[in-house]
Length: 340
Image (cartoon, rainbow, N blue to C red; front, top):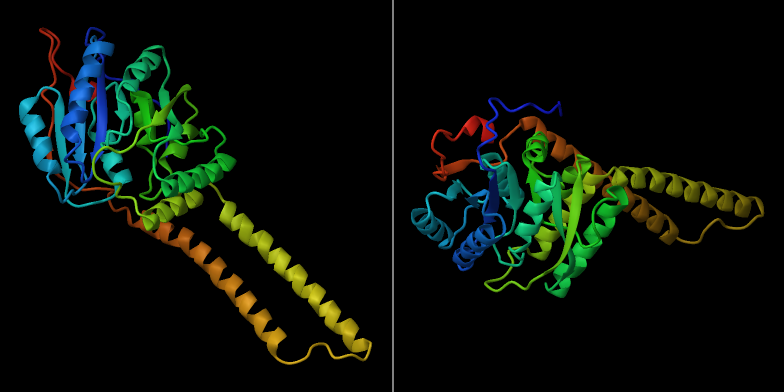
């Protein structure tokens, strides 16, 4: 895998900068129109010199999300790109699909549930124009429920142990330069910790703290089971902690077993009975078997991820795509190769 930058072909300095906003959509029909309006307002007021592309990626929604996206696309074909995946592949896959399909010089990743304040995009673009490759809006505080807040706090506490640059509250809202996007898309794997990959690049990065708002429409699709699954992906992808813990636990169990053996021998040599009844044997066997099954489960988590990656299945399948008819200046035709 190479991470060497590639110079753009036929650079066109007179072409205005293009900012793409990638929005993965899953059961967000009620919030899309308001989100579109807010994005147009912030683009017009904060970075009017840049062109705007809004990239909607419908991740197999079973509500009216795609219908709303198509209506917005018909209303504003010059700014909106509408893409529909063949089924629900998950938020990470929808985000990566959006990054691949976005044509901007900078790409903003934002959720569709209106919990992230769109006005921060203006600050992100300012930092990007000042030469930062990655601008992260990190959650200083969140208005989610107690379960969501607690699980998120635990997950990012663990992530910070192995990726120190991750802010305490975590983040899902960020801007990436074209250089950062091209490098990030070289990472493989369908089950990974995207935020850790982004900071791993080591590119110039700034943080903007904000308070995450309450969800105005519907409810989150993240159940406790899905949150635990994402936490497992974070743990496995961001560190070798589980493997190291297994090794250390093995030494501890071996030491305790050796100490117990010495206790039995000393007791026997003193003329006593090593143990009474079968209970100690059963307890020891059950504890050891429990440790063994747990360790096999950890190894299995790594193995099935390796198996999945070796199969090289695509992260997503795009069923329908309608690209925005981006603005073209007279004498400066839009260069898709340069943008992508």
